[in-house]
Image (spheres, helix red, strand yellow):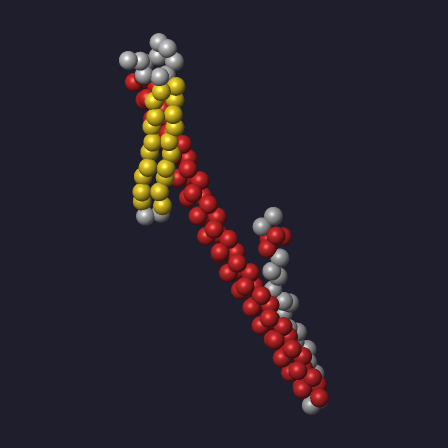
Length: 120
């Protein structure tokens, strides 16, 4: 009996998730089914490895997107606090000037949060 087709499936399970990959190859006349099977097995393992790497990169991307969101919220909070500081400074200057005291000190410039410019 001649073998005309070989199949190979790989399924691995781990804490981060599983990898599943399978393939089928046709054995041409005169080819060794064992050789075709070995090549198919290597190809399936290579594809499974690539799938695992892609999943790891996707998880890293999700993590970094979460970090960006946290940073954006922090920047908004800091900007709000800075506005409050500026308002308090203006009130303090008005109070001092109202009582005849000259205000020579200046509030430092607001911090810059232009991240695109910072990382270019």
